[in-house]
Image (tube, rainbow over all chains, first blue to last red; front, side, top):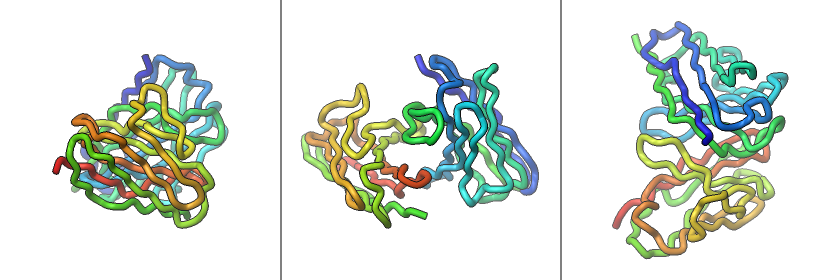
Length: 121
Length: 106
């Protein structure tokens, strides 16, 4: 069955960096676009970034543009999110999510369980 | 950017009730709208896509309608498992979620 497992979350000081990973199984990873979505404690869902199936197209929310980088390794069936210059407002549970299609991006049909990132001094 | 507004923020209902959740877009998104269900501490689950298409495995008591800027998620007969928070999401231009509607037990 389809599985997405995030890792790499934790407590980090403002201004520091963190890299999240999302290991997937149960589907052909290289055929689908992938997303990161976050949810601040007690708040709603907030889309962060998308990467196309081959990694050539990437788009970001304005709130993270220039600080976060999404990438993927199709040989390892793994999605990444490099987060630099972290701020307190980046504190959230970060979910990776599979898109229904490969390039343009549509809906998120499978999600991981999430990993918590806390930015605090 | 397209803004999504859901109403009500909280809805109190009983098992067996028919409930309607509303989602409004700040500009037309055609039918590029999805609905997700999220329970506390869990990942969201896709229920409806393209405004009215039921995701595989989702009970038929869930239905979606609307186009343009006004959309509705209907649960025809609320079940105990349906008490959760529901989010709409537009994917016409980028990806934006509404703030959510929490369906709680009356």
